[in-house]
Image (cartoon, rainbow, N blue to C red; front, side, top):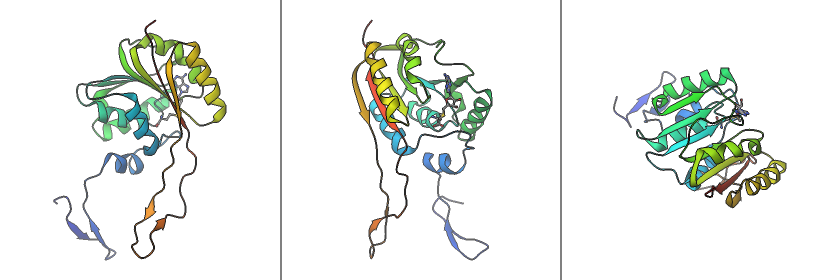
Length: 213
Ligand SMILES: C[S@@+](CC[C@H](N)C(=O)[O-])C[C@H]1O[C@@H](n2cnc3c(N)ncnc32)[C@H](O)[C@@H]1O
């Protein structure tokens, strides 16, 4: 059927055949094995990272692969994501999730601890979603190009303090800390107002730039 076609379901309800967006696929088809980063945070993280088509990017941990999929989508065919994931089982799940949307070729997932060693150099950006991002900063410093952006997602305020201190100690500059809130409205012209329930807390985003060592 052509996209946009109206169909009648066996229940009698009317439905439409719509092309899934990246958000649709992540939210409905990806097998979830970890906490994931939600689109409201992923969007800001990508925008501030400065990555573009063709960028080479470090990401850890991969987990379910929500952020990995968005990064792979964004860097295009010429770009590449190097994902470090410590848990072997999650490596497999993420790989299958990425195959589901045809993005597996743009990603190399390594079953390795990002705090111990990163093999790649001259990368355009690095994204961290691990409990102890401060321990990975020496590796980021080796792997990133001067001026590249480190983007870190953490769920607690305590981690912000430790991470920002470590970033400055490692020589990163232009440190920024964000929290995003998103309110969806019920689109009813007679009763236009925010939906009653929504996600209140996800995490904090820190960005910082690498300097020439
Ligand atoms: C919250 S999950 C990441 C979710 C992912 N950002 C997403 O959007 O689907 C955190 C992941 O980091 C992995 N991890 C924790 N410490 C790590 C380390 N030192 N090196 C590599 N992976 C690590 C965990 O196994 C887990 O899968």
